[in-house]
Length: 439
Image (tube, rainbow, N blue to C red; front, side, top):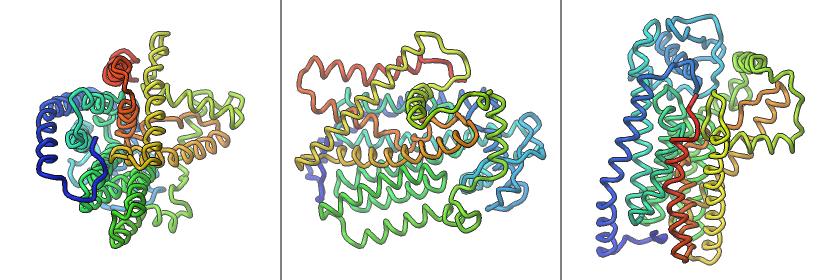
């Protein structure tokens, strides 16, 4: 991988990188093409009532189209009937900023009373996710990766079980994924090429992810902030960029500052949200279960987090439960890779990828702490057990495979290196096919 640089690469280095990128480009094109086909297939056949809260997201879009209010009050939002797409009296439980929904309301056809038009809005989401994956593939193309390592980087991202089905549904996670991918790509380029203009690209990604949802702001903003701090620490960043980073952070956080002024909290706990939560708790019988202690909840959260890497409403068989060892092992490899990247940083031998891995790991750690805190708060208050979803971390989808490559770079034994490389490539494919049907 390329080392951190503050100067333009030499002509020879650029030539070498161009050859590698050109060799991997057809592979990247095939991966992106297959991903888009999977997204479109899901968009065509998916029932809007099955997974990802799509009816609530579609209702948000339809509300903006109906009223023309680009910043609607949460207590005014109502749900559509999932079959007729006519508005009901049921309150909408979403509490996200309206930018994503206003974008779809502007670009897509009117939804109220027209369920057949849902596909057009889903295809807009496919486009968002495809652009995000293209940005991550672009990182791999420009990272001097040999073909097998490019596979080990790109395949795990494309094979994330929820990514294609989520992209084929109307959901603000798709904008968060796009923003996080652009932020990751821009941050890596700023480190690898020494071109600080790439930091502006990263900041645009932060704003997009932040305007999608708060977790997007924490993840993408955390990564870029850590990268900017590293560049400042190494004296590779002009101080004028500090102003740009601060301005972008303020812009990305603006929706939550407005909500703080309006509702007294950055993510408002609306009546519709609590009504939905209590209804789900009763529907699944969670209200009759004994409450776990916080240590017990942590163990349960970790187990559910791995299980929900392949979410399903169907009953898993023994083999499908056993296959959950694949994502668990991938996370263990990533953790080892983060540790090795930290060691290289300590020894001042870090590469651009090491810095991105460390920055991403820090952002994920912060987001995970907040995730557990808020999930346990709602669990303790209501019995809610639907919190541990890995899809919230999709904005930094590249960090786990990059950390896996960090581990791979430290292995000198050819047999062990080949075994790990084979696992990083084949494991995600095998798990995606045989792990469980998506429910």
